Image 1 (tube, rainbow, N blue to C red):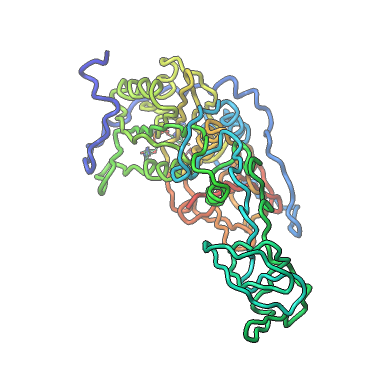
Image 2: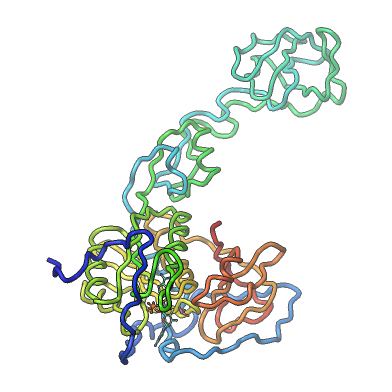
Length: 458
Ligand SMILES: Nc1nc2c(c(=O)[nH]1)N[C@H]1C(S)=C(S)[C@@H](COP(=O)(O)OP(=O)(O)OC[C@H]3O[C@@H](n4cnc5c(N)ncnc54)[C@H](O)[C@@H]3O)O[C@H]1N2
Ligand code: MOO
């Protein structure tokens, strides 16, 4: 039972409530040793290098930036951390949902056609369905959705609309553009040996055949395809339930912050990302740094509740950063403790009995980087999807690169090659807000080498 002195850990601040700044973060705190496991990683993992054509290859852009000693302790290499977050996730159970509510969900079973597509022989062009060689006698007309026409005899034609059922016996449809009509007689005005312009029943797919494999995301086109083949209900993976826990005495959720206070930027960013990643965001809660038992109780409860708890802040080594201790006390397994990337180094992936926790750094751009590193792959794994493949491209411009860590750099992709958006700072989303993607720049990248891109949802 919780002590009555400890406020409800999952109590969100009422909208508009401004909180006073918490107690100052005074006093020395022993830096935590990096997880011994991380020393296993001796060299970059999965960071392929390829060179762009026509670029200078003999320059170096490696600029080593000063970092706190903990940074130099390393961490799981970026690509390995991303792959691990996907690999450790067991796909969630199956649910049946109506097509109307299935956008973004992941098929748990192959999607099979319930009907032939097209369902019947139909016209691909507006014109005349004809039988035999012309000229033809027009014996009627047929519209899409209307009653069909009687079978054609040789030398007969019916005027026909695109999508209307082609009468039995018709060889082809002659488009209006290439016929001449005189009274009840039409003749081909051009080369009569053109295309048939008839879409035959089952030409696209026949009933019972799979049209999409399990693991496919129900995109806009996939939803339309499912409807085309007569499907109303799809079997998908349950959407992972997610709670966003924001930590920090200084955090306010609305209005203009007072001196010492900071407006929450992680909540709005993560809410949008989680929507794009088809997670079921259950709620966004706030816990103060003090007393630490509040965060502990919130994490404890959340680890028995939702599929994924995302904690904003509390991941580093400061006096108020309680997450590691909380996870240890909760008996959680820590899979990733620090990732060798800039920004976003202090991120955490942990689990307990099928419940997951992703700890994001408090700095908002670093939090966004961490969400792409650990959270997106985890959600993909839970949804039974493959790890999203990253396009590999040449960059326009030279980003700041780190000698030993992966740099995650906002880029704008409105030309042939994405160009670097300058001014990215861990605590500021200004550059990311102007970007279309984040470039994954491997350690000691050199101009002319390609990079992978994490595409930002709109
Ligand atoms: N001695 C060390 N200090 C720090 C290290 C380190 O390795 N050794 N790492 C730095 C890096 S890198 C980051 S990132 C931060 C991560 O800190 P935490 O995850 O523990 O987060 P906080 O300390 O609570 O906050 C950091 C920063 O972010 C602001 N913040 C927090 N939450 C939000 C939010 N929801 N919206 C907007 N801004 C937020 C907070 O006010 C702080 O300014 O640690 C460095 N220190
Ligand atoms: O990496 Mo911190 O994650 O630089 O702001």
